[in-house]
Image 1 (cartoon, rainbow, N blue to C red):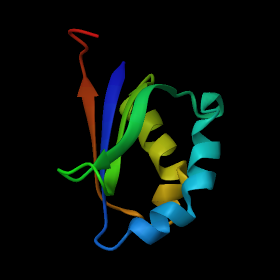
Image 2 (cartoon, helix red, strand yellow):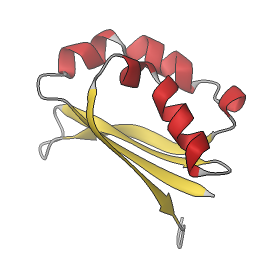
Image 3 (cartoon, helix red, strand yellow):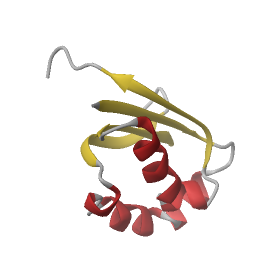
Length: 95
């Protein structure tokens, strides 16, 4: 099943995001141990596209609990960068 993870950064979190970027990128390089396949991911940006304000993932996993474990293991989560996280099931209509 597909899921969307929509995570908005806490106010003033950009420095922490940048400081943890390499660990986050390394974590995402192989998610097989967590039984999650990343379909698409990237940073959310403000309206002018200049400042990162969060993260968006479309992932494939067996169930929501698997996605929650994946999200909790992300270095960005551990560093407290994300203020609000929403995980929602997703049905792909077009690609």
